[in-house]
Image (cartoon, rainbow, N blue to C red):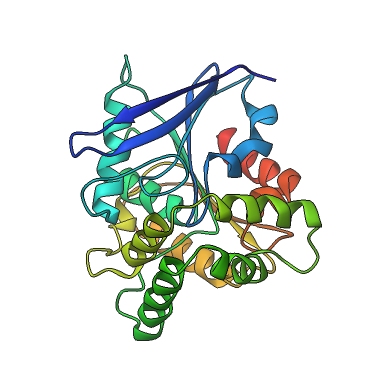
Length: 269
């Protein structure tokens, strides 16, 4: 197992971001979803750390990271930029994002053509224009502020497929339980905020794979196909593929082998 270095990165706006880094080779940045932490990507470390420098971090308000200014999708993209700019040399990163993390990855890639590849797992989109989605997310935020334990079991039920094993449910329970109630609530509000708008998908130039769970209720397969079309609509030839794995919305935990195979399909390009 690759030795892991942990440290904190402080942004100009005062967010203190927990970072884990291991491995060697081209840079791969991994970004978790709502209620997640760096632990979400642990199953991928043994597969890729011998070939890639794997950098994962907790978004401000999640896991071990904190924030001072109100979070937003634009701010999360700035945070990613700040982490990358703090590194000793300019690199062309592979961006791996789950759910919320995929949103940040697509925003960054649409503005930075040097991104080497995108891996979008259970990808998300703006829903700020959908009143039912806004109501659901603001309700979840209010419930989280009353105590994380009040949303823990419902999160597992909505995110994990019935066919998955209890170890997956245990890991998800641990990640959700570790969340600060205000941080979790603020992240819910970020996802339905008016400041969360879709990026220019057609500006994404790098090879991209969208990984959908066949039992995912949060990000169904239809969304991955929709995003594939939007990314392909840009000028220039690009490789965009959709791969389906056997999972709910916790694809990396539920079908690690399937996710690895899907990732390899784009990393080989």
